[in-house]
Image (spheres, rainbow, N blue to C red):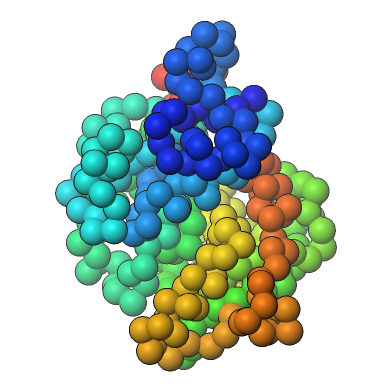
Length: 305
């Protein structure tokens, strides 16, 4: 089954050309199917790139997905046109009376700030509380996952001496987890962050289980069963060239930055990077959607009850 997107959304054409099954909302209305309603709260500055990355992953399963793009109500983006935001995004205050089978909260390049110093923190608290009554399962990604685990459990983020940057091997710590069905004993995940969550602090919190972790970059994927949530601090959704774009940007700006580890062949930035995480990315998001499909109420009014 396809992912349901507006036919004029830039991601529609990109994914269609890649062979991802996409369907316009007009055609989807003719199908007698209850699609999974998934929200994407997009906090990243490059909205179009991010929405395409996540739509690619959640659109690759046999399930029909109805994707709703959501933004913070008062925060104005400077990197995406106002016309795009007005056409395709709904402010949170407009959707908070709706129910969702799943919600993805993306990262944001604000990890140097204390959570309480983020301009939209109060509304994000409202979102996180809302997930407990209106969302069946929530997936917090990078800073979004850090914000959730901090809010619900008090686990702190810690600044690193140097940026964790590159593609790092992670160990499968819970082979029986339904979210890791089909995973190898190890997988590679892109990492790009100046902060970390510490495993011992996660262990001290109630109800958390680390599913993927790296000796180099620490815990990566954490299940929070009590809050029906997953938190991932790294970037399975990244395109082949996302780390390259970040590296080239910093080099051009004169910002001190290391070559991303284990990304370019022989760590040579003049060579094309290799994507070694794509299959596990699809597995993880497919498993998440499958768990939602198997457990979400058919009557969406019952979500959160």
